[in-house]
Length: 276
Length: 143
Image (cartoon, rainbow over all chains, first blue to last red; front, top):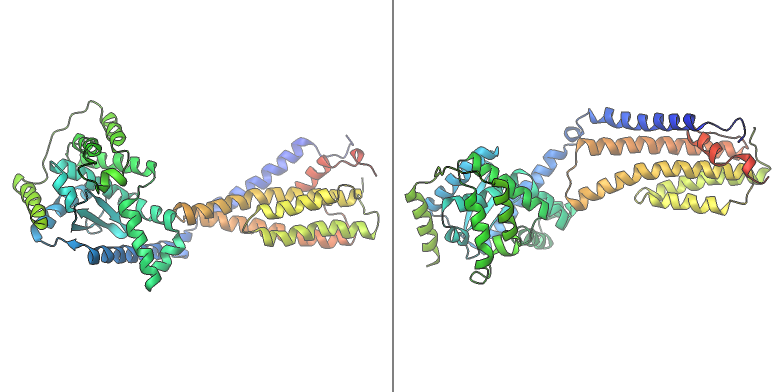
């Protein structure tokens, strides 16, 4: 090797200098709040708000919303109790009760939580219903809803959906379809289940009831062909039930009812009346 | 050892290696691999050229490798935001700005090197120049 060939150490040192400069520049620039400068958050919040409202409008037009005061109030009482422990502003959560046979509940953008009467009819106690609500609240709190939509439909498509027009109503239909009948990624579902369990424990509700509800679902598949929450949206409900039970372990929980017996009974009765 | 072009044609070829990477930096920004492939083609196309040409082709190629890492990270980060539902964060915007700064530095350096080598002046960049000396030693190459 000629005498003037640079040494390996010198080259390595120069590489470290360049890498150091790169990371120092990146680190330096990270100290600036670019999201505020480019107003990224407010843009995405506005988009989320608009998509949420338009999607809910679409569901409302094609389904019968149960507006009877009592069942909605009872449902909101349970959801508010959970949102208080989840850190979500209860005012952000918009509960809508829809008369539908499917055992289903799903979250839309901007805190809209759609609960089908079929789910309430299927739940044997408030803890089971609280588990499902907690699961959906977790999707909202962890921002899974917009993540899933951006992945399935693309961010550009979503932003264009807020512009109006016939083509965009198709996008909204697809948005509702994706959120109501397609599964989240397995990791997001697990995260929502685990978070729901944490909410339930904090709220003084026995999480084992939620696990039992999930375990019961596959057996009811034939009886309830359109049951979405457990069957098509959440295909591994049996596995998820076992995971929850494993996470809970041998812990025992005191049952502190959120609703009075009268309220729970009235909720079940009212949603049953709607289909008659 | 002083590295000089053997003639007018060699200086032009060496200068072209920079111009080539310059054109493909622009074309390859959406897909960073494009400018690396272009530099590779030019590098292999000039393997039998004179030492001055080969040395500068190697320096261009190495600098493209560095940009490939920086731009690919930015590319996949952007793709994961558009298609994967990842969020736009301050870290992401800072990364894009850092990548932009480094691309501009490379852009400026490339233009300067293209002009100088066209005049037959040897331009040796920090790090890439020494690495090129190491990978492309005159003793290992036929004159």
